[in-house]
Length: 196
Image (cartoon, rainbow, N blue to C red; front, side):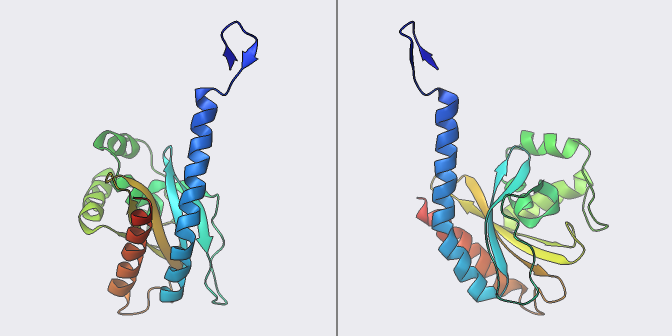
């Protein structure tokens, strides 16, 4: 941007905001990556980090399992909030006006299991807020199950989500749902504490 009539140029507010966002994302990824790796070691499945951007979930990082059958790397992918566990966690943390606007528009159905009814989604979001995590099975893809928990900063704002996902035929193993939920929520708390 031009500074006065001097013929000199400086960095504008838009570029400063963009640079701050990139720096924040890089810091978040750098701090979360070892936690994601530990989560993979605990669960035996892939884990990732995502954030809200506009009205989509964006995947920032991904740590893959050593299993022969894995899911693709979603880093950089953008998906509708209501079809994946991390998106639901992020949507549940938004102000009521944001949630109402999101649910008022036509919602894409990716599989027969994708929930697109606003009243049912509203109840689901209330449960996610109460429980502090979200599970999805076959809602984005028929063969994927996922669980996510919010990363909350020192001010109490949800700034990201940590998730763990795998092929539905093996994830979660019978009886492991509560243990995996605890691993994921603990990982999200660790990342939030690092940002305090």
